[in-house]
Length: 146
Length: 317
Image 1 (cartoon, helix red, strand yellow):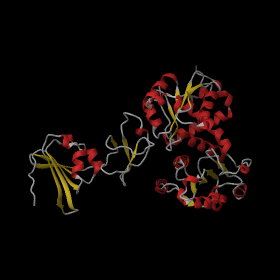
Image 2: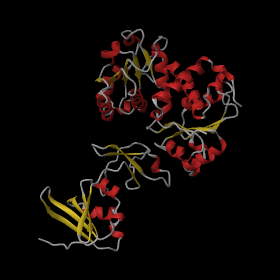
Image 3: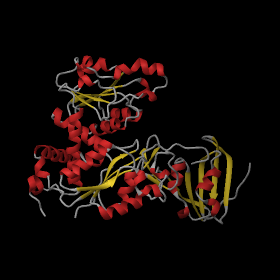
Image 4: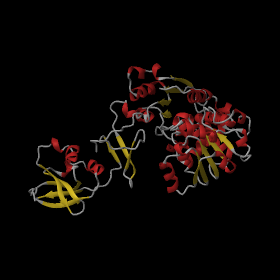
């Protein structure tokens, strides 16, 4: 079994769906940081068989929890201080997300108007449905997207 | 000074606010001449990025009947949009000229973008297939005026219930009132979307879905007709087989209640035979006039000119 050392200060994202860690690494902008990041793929999981884990040695405040919750609110966020878990953050679906995803409706004003923020609102929490604030089109994930 | 208000969707107004709006429209209908100077010195800009004869003329007539003036353009090619100007910039410019703006745009959400940047009230006069709130206000006022109340009736919505934005908007607006039973009459291909039936179920609002108008017409208090377009069908065979189910003619109407009213957002093609036009139950042309009154009331409301002392020619300036 592969061992990855513990981090002193930062956060650990646990229970990431297997295979999603690299995408999350990019979406959270971790590729732009100069800090230590460990990407662990296909770790053993009692619940799901396999999972991914991200260990990041950077202050938790730099993490956009809304983005993370939108990607997968089942991810566990462990805040680490002095090598110990000091807090487990529960992710909730954000009511509104801004400039994270784009509307794919070709009839939406965002397809032609420059400089508009891309805003989606949580239309159905139970079914995790987001709709574009401008055209109300349901967000549908496409390949390579969140 | 009151906060600037816009109209983007029919649900922007509470039920109480709608009541007041419709009361104002009723008063305008009864005392039309008294409102002839209510908007003296005011200017309405009609910014229509795509052609729409009835809606644009209705807005322009509304402002002219209120004593105001109208500027604007009737298609995108005659506006600075053809030079690539954004909606946000256009409305900033229009705000310098006019007191209120009615905007139609082929892109969904365009009016919302305009409202966010505007210094004057913006009315969404249709944004693509998304919203057309003044049509819904027209429908509601027509129903209230003809049926006597917005509630306690069975309404049949007939035709293309899948793509028809006026139908979706009307269902959402009516769902706020009590005692309404919906009957959706459409071919299976053009059924009302699931999210609407789920909304009705979650609020315990009764509805049923049927294929033939004939089967339900005797039970209706109101019949809202829409067009069934050939191109919406998967194949020509189905269209030919089903189209007659959704054409209202004298024979079908003979089985309806004598008090039923027939509404249609217009333009009509062949879904209502012309032989129905003279029937007292045909309400689709009076509906156009209710559209004028409700737009007049809306202009007064958004310009905050609805004070009691404004009525019947008593101007405050």
